[in-house]
Image (spheres, protein in one colour):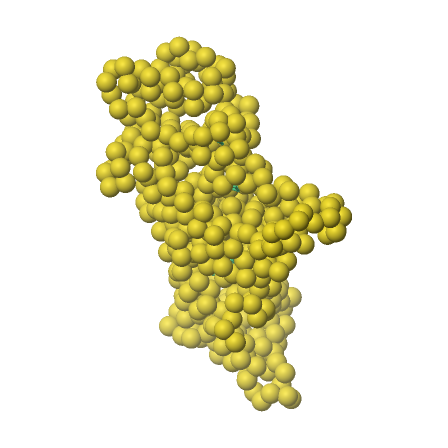
Length: 257
Length: 216
Ligand code: HEM
Ligand code: SF4
Ligand code: FES
């Protein structure tokens, strides 16, 4: 099939970017979206032009590297005729009609500066995790499997929340560039588990504080994040974060006496 | 933002029920308007309660506008300023027109509240409706809504409030942590629309009935 592309080209963070048109022949429906871009880059390289820079690693929907905005939808899967909840690398060209025009732009948010073309710097999400998205445990012999008990519903919720791959689509989709879905996924994950309890209060205070300091926007309950999340992290996670945050205001943790 | 907004919503609902008294009779309305000045009277002298109430309300309005300014600035910066994507699709059912225009409906509400207070509380005489006529406080309401210009202004303002509340009400509950499941969200959003609609119609019934001379 033949595809028309409008791709965001931007040399570096300082330069203004713009959309450039390409047309690409010989695309097969079985190609993934990234393989389609590989094909384009081969042709560009042969012509002696600069290939389009984009990020990828696992190409199986688990590392979170590959996200781009496709026809106005982060990862693209929710914008095609038969929606698929997945990452850019797991979206296939059969989702697009022959001869269609596809616009590809990078994540755009204050906290995600564009490095080149479709690649943005998502390390702000790592800073949020560093601020509290962990638990502290002593290493040593593995504990007994049944030593710590947890009810099934809680462990399921923790597991579902833990599937967040840190791709940043939620930030890209949010009209405010807010990272609340991402942060709330980690808060929910650890808040459900016994191991997450000792640091629960400080965690929410620090992660939310870090988020604001990094220049992410605030949440106004629009829901675009959950609509595009490739892992189906639900909007309810944000209310879990808010409940923990409100409760933390009445706790001593984090106060200097 | 959420707490002050909800206080204002509760105030609006009481205000609306109070206004509807004019449908019963002029005496009833005047009695109610007088009652507002004497609430908790044997305990507190004169209109002390009214003034305490006004202070709390003013505090809520000031805090609400302050947080609105903060959140609007943070969000504008957060998305990276103007001109973001060349195409952006809306996919969420919660991404409503009302939700996207909170700051604008808010600004219309501020302007309206200023006019409304001048008209009925601070300087009624300047609007040609003194409140010491034969019909008392109800009299100034009749004068105001005999004029179609005020009908138009009130319809616009109530539409703005209706939009603001139709997102704000559910959003406040979500901010306070009440959005616990997909079903809860549906219920909260339905309540939000209902409160918006009740406020819209509840406030506009008396002006329209007065304008068309159904009550006089
Ligand atoms: C005085 C002028 C007003 C301004 C400038 C204003 C502005 C705003 C803004 C910018 C927001 C945040 C938008 C968002 O969450 O997307 C908001 C939220 C809200 N407003 Fe207002 N507003 C005003 C009056 C009112 C009134 C009269 C009410 C009561 C009926 C009200 C109830 C709410 C509620 C409940 C929220 C949601 C809070 C949350 O999501 O946490 N506002 N307002
Ligand atoms: S919450 Fe979803 S969209 Fe956001 S970073 Fe995690 S996986 Fe990506
Ligand atoms: S490349 Fe790893 S998720 Fe797409």
